[in-house]
Every structure is written in C-alpha cells, then in structure tokens.
Image 1: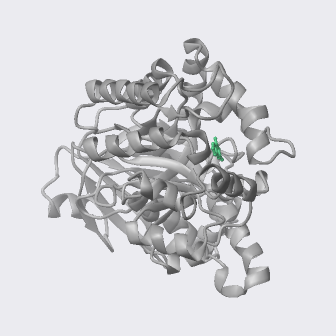
Image 2: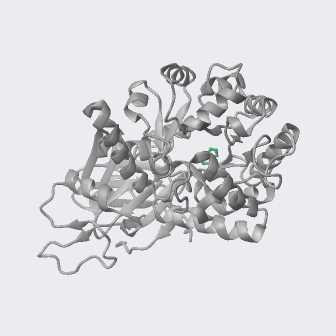
Image 3: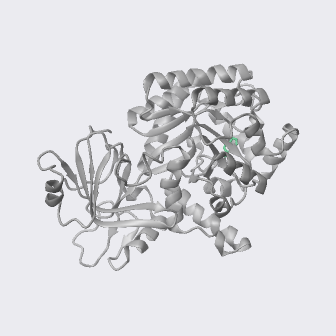
Length: 461
Ligand SMILES: O=c1[nH]c(=O)c2nc[nH]c2[nH]1
C-alpha cells in the first residue's frame, strides 16, 4: 500500500542517532516533510502544531501526523539480506556455512528459476522486511535474470529502497545452479543492470549492485571482470568475507598466490569504498588495515554468525579501526528478517566477545541502533539521504508504538504490542526496553521518501 506524498508535519517524540554513542531524544518535536519526501524543517520544544504551521506558513495545506503512543525512529537499513532464501528463515539445523550452502541454500535458490515461486517469495520478503521497519535493503537475489528483475519490480512497486544483486557464481554450486563461464556471469549481470536502469533510470528506489557470491564461488577471471564492470559503471558491490574458518582455509587453497581473503578482492579491483563485505568475523589485523585503507564497508550479521556457528565478530575492533559498519539480517543464515533482532543479537555477541576479551568489546544499545540506521546509511552509500532526521534528508521513518500500561491510562494500545510502558521509565530506559523486547507489532507505520509503505496502527491526523 502506498499513498501519494503530501506536505506533512510529524508531531511528537523523535529519536535518532547523532553518532554511535549519542542517541538524540527530542520530545515535543515537529518535522516538516515536503511533497518530495524531504525533511525541510525540524523544530524542538514545540507548544502545538498550529504554532509550527504558522511559523512555516504551512497553515492550509499540511497534513498532520501525531502518534497515539511511542516515537518516530529512522527506518532500518538492512545491509545484507538474501531475499531468495527467505522461505528457509529458521531452517539450518546444526549445519555450518559450506554444508549449509549445499544442503539448504543452493536447492532453494535454484528453485527460484520458477517465476511464480520467485514472485511469491519476493512479495513476502518485501512485505516482511517493511513490516519490521526496514526502509532500505541490500538484497541478494539468485543467478536467474528474470527472477532478479522481478525482485527489482516488486521493491519499486512497494516503495522499498533497495539494492538488487544478481548472484554471480561460476566456480561453485550444482550443475543446475551456477554460471557456465565468467563470460556468462558478466553478460547476465549486465542484463540485470540494463533492466534496472530501464525501470528506474535515476535509481530513486532501486539500484543494481554487483554481487560476486564470495571468492570460492568465483573464478579469478570472473572476479576481474566484475572489478572492471564496477570501474565502468560505478555501481556498488556486495559479497561475503571471512565468515567461517573452513571457508577462509578454502580461499587460501584456491588463491595461493594472494596474501589473504581481502587481497583476493583487492587484486580484482573490487575492494573499494563501494564494497559491502558481509561478516568479516575472521579478518586478520592486516586485512582490517587493508579494508580501512580502501574504505570498504562491513555488514555485521550476528544472528547468522551465531546460527551457523561461524564465530563472534569483533565489531568494536572494526569500529575502532575507523571502518564503517552496518547491520545485516543475512536471511537465511540469519533466522529473522528484523534488523531490531539483529541489533539485539549484536548486543549479545558483543557480550560473548567481552567474556573473553574484556568489557571494552561490549556494544551499547545506542551503538547498535546507530549501526542499524546512520551506520547502515554509510555502508550503502546513502549517508547524505537517510539514517537520521536531518534537514535535507529523506523521510524514511518508522512510527514505534508502545503498550501504555500506566494505571491512569484509559485504554491500552489496540495492538497490545510488546514493551509495556509503565509511565515511570525514563525515555532512554524505554528505548532499551524496546530494543530488548520489541518486534514488528511495535511498528505502527513506515514511510520511504515520505510515502506510507506499511501501516498497522492509526495515528491522529
Ligand atoms: O551467510 C552466507 N550466506 C550465503 O548465501 C553465502 N554464500 C556464500 N557465503 C555465504 N554466507
């Protein structure tokens, strides 16, 4: 469901990250969003909407949105999700990465050559991620061009900002699910790029992303071709790196002439500031320095790393090195399509790291919310457009509803959303409760570029 954008004043409490440790909480605020979905003013300590309307001369034509409970928060940014794997979310048994790929993942991805099935899966995953407040996602599709193009159509129609990657793999996978040659990889990737350009020439909503699956699945020639394609088109790149130990060893075996995993991508011209590297659990210190030197980005996928027993990513170390880090659900290595769940899992994983390496490793609630929003915006190259409530940015936002159980409250929230608000908590504490207890029932409405793209709760207007 998408409604035409109108000049709108959002009125209430706004929460967003200014920097990793600083969450700004603005009560009695007002944000003005124009017809193009851009934030044109942010007012604090507002007495009433009429005063704001008058101040900005928006007296006659502005719609006003006031949540009945809760607060506005920037839309989440999922920097790593396999749309094609969504039906397997939660299905992984005791597998680890390489056997999981063969036993669970390639058969499912291969089955999406059937467009009816692909349509069903892709509609569901976009609905589900929107319902969890994900306004931007960097998707992996499959090797199939028609199904990948269909995912682009669906994201565009539903209004979800998305990077769409046709998966490239000419050196791994069953016969029914691999590219025949590096030449085929390149040709099919170009086909998808051309298609996405045809439906969204300025990439307002959907953008192609060059997607070598991971080094073991790509020949040296394939990686080099994709590096050249990146230089030619400027499109971003996404892949996996150093997720588990057998995978890292496999890369050493397959690319003995290279100094390490990161160097395989660097040699191919792929390790640039437009590269999103998922996982990065087992990077060496030299690789961390190389990633930083190239200004490549990292998608931290804690749910997946725990589910597939891949390892605990040292996020603090990556952040201290100055690398831009965001959160990924990594469905279906990750079991949930929710970035709030990823944030929660990131808190947990950092505590496991802290148990052996010291308290400095612990991430705070403020930090994981930063990773899920402003940090993610940097990772996907949209820091100037999304991730926070700043004038000039796009209104990509979610309305978080809470369950008011204050004894004096006349009615409880109709959704009975989790996160009971007793009324005596401080606002920072309330946000901590949301991060640890919330889910999609707390997402009342979601907007991308000012357009309503998901709604479960009524606001006053
Ligand atoms: O978590 C992951 N999911 C995948 O689909 C994949 N392919 C290569 N490496 C991978 N890791």
